[in-house]
Image (cartoon, rainbow, N blue to C red; front, side, top):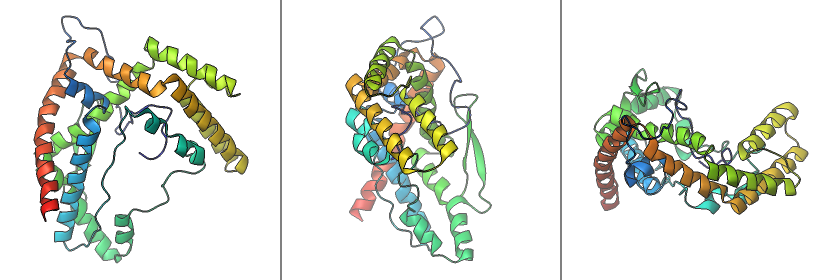
Length: 308
């Protein structure tokens, strides 16, 4: 989450086949144009979703830690999960990060820094590391396949502390996996479709004109980053490349801010939710109900930790 992603796209593909499974269509007798605000938040990972997702992820971390400590491992407490709000345009663009790291191509953000848990695991003997992984994921690391929005599927750990904690929050692994991956799945698709919406195309034209005025010529923020990644793969690290990367990334960000590209894209993504197939809107409503239950359990878990 710390690395600046391609342009202002928020949807990240976390499982194979997540994009392009079903196209958004206009309402007709087989489709519905009604979408609750909660469904829109869930499908676009915006609105109230980031804050409640923080609670779910933080509770899952606390349960993992509690389980591992009961197994005899003195794991450190993970830092609290903090998710950016898509509505915060300045945070989405992150000009300060761009001025230091560019897109994170020549200098990836935080990738070389091991987490406190990773550092702790490295202090264990080899046999204890094996026992730790078995406690975390189950002996033999069993996995189960979960169907998301067809044809997409994802494999998740089916044993150990990870699976136990997620079952205690969501009721079963299938529900947890769908809560975890379906918002990514839908947001990836909606993000791609939103780029074809007229208002976004108009904002993108404004962005291109701004970029050309700064002596850079790319058709989109995604194309700018792709071109620089290819250049880096061809020529390797150098001070000259890093200066160019930062210059392009900063110009991209400043022009995105001027054209309000993240705000326009988010509005387009949210507007497309009501055109999802009725089956997917029904799934979102069902997931919303299950998410409320999981959140209640997460808040109880986090409250127990605070009271303890």
